[in-house]
Amino acid sequence: MEKISLEQELRSNAYPGRGIILGKTPDGKSAVAAYFIMGRSENSRNRIFVEEGEGIRTEAFDPSKLSDPSLIIYAPVRVLGNKTIVTNGDQTDTIYEKMDKQQTFEQALRTREFEPDAPNYTPRISGIMHVADGEYNYAMSILKSNNGNPDSCNRYTFAYSNPVAGEGHFIHTYQGDGNPLPSFEGEPKLVEIPNDMKGFTDMLWDSLNEANKVSLFVRYIDIATGRYTSAIVNKNK
Image (cartoon, rainbow, N blue to C red):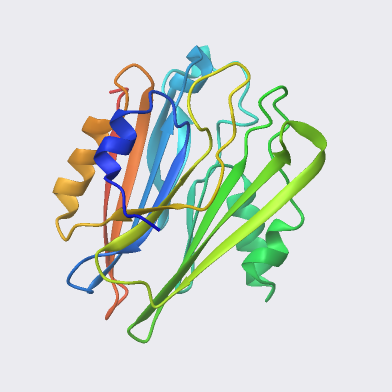
């Protein structure tokens, strides 16, 4: 698979929707996660990321303008022991609860499907990072309708053992803007991951479409110790 420029990929797509990036720094020392949300409606744009425990959750920036919380208020990031879960919906809680009962990432997601937001049927994208004993691996998943047919759910999981230093994978909900919104297709995209967390955060935020971007979360986890550093950027302030 050809490695693409994440900056160019984001700048060339006005509406990738919500996106997850997982990978490893070039020095091999850090596991990296990033998650961003975008919005076209007032309800979707009326959000911020806030810290919650070791993870984050979405929150209405102006509660008086919140019309429907069902698909926009959730915990995108939760931590279960040495596992970090990153998703674009309340399947974060499903993965957390099922894995806490010794089920696998895939088993947990078999109980879920794409979002019930016809006619888009937004895919549910999810990631899981496992950092333990100086080792790191991750997996990504997408649950999507069968080419817009809500009667069939297609489930794909991509697992990356001992990921290559300096590389990561990017998966997002939409191919681009449209009506209905076209779902992401294919494997997660191979992208470069830098050592510099602030530079990475700034690049991601600056590359997202100014009108549609809402919030960004980035975390670098020290593979040797499990300690992490996080950043949150919110358009609403």
